[in-house]
Structure formats: structure tokens, C-alpha cells
Image 1 (cartoon, rainbow, N blue to C red):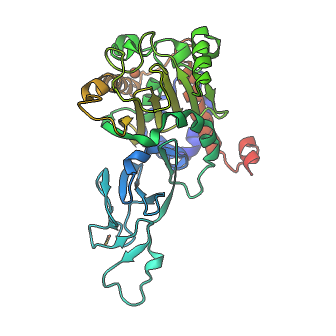
Image 2: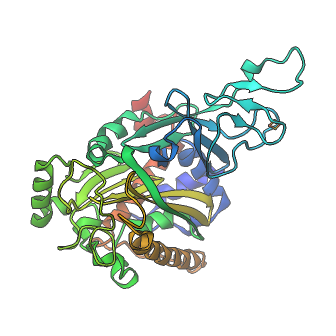
Length: 417
Ligand code: FES
Ligand SMILES: [Fe+2]
């Protein structure tokens, strides 16, 4: 049986509202299928517009086997390319961030324009056609100051995602921000365990004393059920929407992305140890109130996000191997906020640095236990872990849909044709 068929068979036998079988979390075969069916097919959040504001600014990222470079071209557009030279394949840009007037391969100095055209290749003979050796493009778009790429030959339609999330982002003026600090950690855990951990706060009270100062442990806030029936949340939504901030919980029919603005612990306005703002200068000049809760978004498989009145943080997840996941966190503040005057990095970052470190430890221990041949999971808590059930249901249905594309009797595949 092929790895794909074996995975499909296990998906179809899975118990509802229960963690997956061990193989899903640790085998190279399943991981490769996930790369091909999910990570190489879906739109992935990569970084922020403000990181590539000027012509020649670039950022690089590794998506599975694909090194990618995202660059701002001379016309102000965003472009993404496979970061692999068309001569003998060398990676062209190796820094995480950089600025260059042209993209020059370090091996034999083939030189590419910012739009990917090959403009110089020394001594290649008279028959060599430079126009046939430009960088290979990768789908790239941005919404609300957040950049997404897709390495598939044909990308899924991004417009439904844009239409859903853009109204929530626009009032926060995320184009006018800068990254005040970023951290990248490797968690020795499967990427789905990292998501499962993120999608519940059953573990928060004991493991996250820093986060719990301002983030409510209430399942109506952390899960995917009950927010619309909670009077404190709905009265906040009504107020925030009255001042022009889309706030209501809204989840895509596919379950792949969700937006909501959620209240923080009463009396707190930001993720700091004291619960007060970390940044004196607000993110957006049009938002006068300090307490706008936190705008939360996830888009599987690569981003979750918070935006408060004073700053934002984005969390980008990328798989490294079946049991390793890279998590990059960026703290964004107004572009004119001055370090040491308007904010200090320690106050800005200490809650999420501590939270990420605790989650890394939790996920790594989770991975170690799941690797045991004796691993036998119980159902998720219907009260605290409905968000995890939602993630696993999305994963299973998304993967099953991809694995059965083109097969007779698959109604989802038939609907797309
Ligand atoms: S591999 Fe890039 S110039 Fe030779
Ligand atoms: Fe956590």
C-alpha cells in the first residue's frame, strides 16, 4: 500500500474528537505526504510588508525542501521566487533578511533583476538565451500588511481568505509598522502537536502564569464555541464594531481560517506582565481607545496572530522534519515608535517569550510520550479542547480531500471540476 493510501485508510478509521494515531506524529512517510498535500499546496504566511518596504529588500524562508526569497521590486510590487540559481542551483540569498539592488548568485555571479530576469551570466557562449533562465516565480500576495506565498503550480483562490480577513486587519494600519523584535525557536515536536497546543488553554493556568495575567482562560475565548452566547464578549463586540473594528467570531466553512476580536482580562489591554500597554504610541492613529481586546486570527497551517491597540505579534510555523517545527514570532509596533522612548523590548516581549518557551517544553514532552508504543489517547475535553477537535477535523478533511482528488465518488473533487 502506498504511503498516501495508508494515511487515507488511517484517517478514515480515526476516532472522532480524539488525537490521531502515533504514525501521524512521527513517521517520515506521513510527513512527506503532508508536505506534498498541504504545505506545498496551501497559501502560507511568510512575513510582513514592513519587512520589505523598499526596492531590493528581501526575506528568505525554507518551506520543506523549497528555499524561497520574497523581494520588493522596483515598481513597489512584491515578488517571490525559488531561491535556487538557474545555473547550477546554488541558493542565491542566504540571509534571513537583506537588501540588494539585484540578486547576485554567490557561486558564479549570475545576476538577476528584482523581477527575476537574468541580466548577466559571464561567458556562456553566443547561443545562450538569458531570457530562458530567469528565476522561477512563486505565488505571492499580501493582505493587511501580511505576506502569503504558495509554492504550488496552481495556487488555490486566495480571494475568499482576503475577503474574510482584510476588514479585520485594515483598521490596525499594519503597513505602517516595524518589527521591534523577532525570535525563532525549534520545537522538537510534530507541527500538528504545536497546533494542538495552540488551539486550547486547558494547559494555560499551570503552564502560563505570564500569559494568564491578560489572556482569559475562558474556553469561550480560547475555543471555537460559545463566544456568541457570552454576554461580556457580545457587549464588547457591539462596542468595538460601533467604533469601526470588525470583531465578531467568523470561521471559514472549511475551518481553515478564523477571525475574532476577544476581550482580555478585565483591566488589561496588552500582553505585558502588568497588563498595560507595552508601547506608548498606538499602532493606528484612528484607534483612540486603549482597550480593543486582541484581534486573533489563525490560518492553517502556518499562522496565528494577535493585534492589540499598542502592538501586534505574529507566529509563523514551518515544519522542519516529522518531529521538528520552527516557530518564528515577530513583535510589531508603529513604525515611528522609538525604542527606549516609546517602548522597551523586555516589557514588549517577555510574556510571549516565556509562553513560547513553556509551550516548547510542553510540546516536546508531548512528542516524547506520543512516540511510546504504549501511547493510547483519550478523547479531547469537550469543554476546553473543542478548538483542538476543530483543528484535527480540518486537518483530516483537508488531507482526505486532497488525497482523493479526481477519484470517482469524491463529492468535493467533483464539485471543483
Ligand atoms: S550556481 Fe549560480 S552562478 Fe553558478
Ligand atoms: Fe500554551
